[in-house]
Length: 454
Image (cartoon, rainbow, N blue to C red; front, side, top):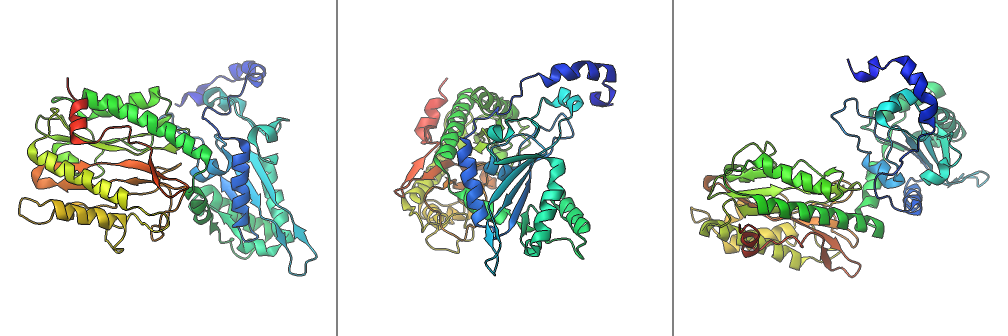
């Protein structure tokens, strides 16, 4: 039985008064000023076309082995890191006859506190706190029980909103709420939820100064973790032990979690793109590919380095390594803000950074059969990074100023047991040039060998 179910009621009553007096730790993360989140909500309201957005926070995990992580869009718009909340954003609107208007409105609905559950999960804030709007930074804070009446009143006053209700269609709470709303208002059909991710994805692509500062912290912590791991690698070490060094150092440097499951592949495993078993024992003469980084206050970093297990690249390993590094440099140097595209593995665009890296590989190396080596580059060159390690973006569109993205060419040759990937994160500065967030981690072949000298 889960311990929550066996907690004696007499202890629950005894602790209730004391627990009400406990300080509530609201922001374990580095949170941006509340004005930053308010600005984002205003920007979203301008994209709603006079509609209403209802966003659901992540729920409390059901097991002790699944740590809570806030929904990415919800956090982007609120900076609120507690489960079970709902955000309502009402876009301003004027009727066709100009006789009625609707002002902008934002409401954060908070669950009613469950003191017994909080003995296990920690104290929470609810709407009964008189300083809730100040603490959360949202204009109105209401109990969750007020949500049906407030939204119902809005929909009854303007039936257009039935066709302009934005939410998270893949979220079970959102789907259940849409069905309940239809029943409550006597609608013939359940409202068709418009996908708010299509709007927030565009907003999230451009990073503000506060976001960039957090991404620098994520990058710095990840560089330190990779440095500690590289220095420890040796023949006979398990891949899992290397992953453990990464995770330990991420946490020690302020990250709350890895930003994705560490990929630590040696020898034949270095040629598997998303290898995650991390169970093999490394052997001398092999390369080790490590794709691992951390998440700092909800913002991700993404780094890959490749190294020789015994500290010295063979001639062939160094040849492949130099080609990959050259491809990354070629793509970086070719970048033009507002023009360059990434994540183009099929090379549909002759000027995409993928195509530039691919052409560089073909011009500088061959496989064991004398054929151009570019065919062993089998994935997109990069992706946007932010609150998610793969932030949303339409990759048919070029990269713009203010974005953060990866450049990560790789060559994977199973018949040679050689996989090399080099990955860094780049910020597009206001002048259109690139700033590397992760290049404090050395990446030339000589520098990698130097880090491994015992």
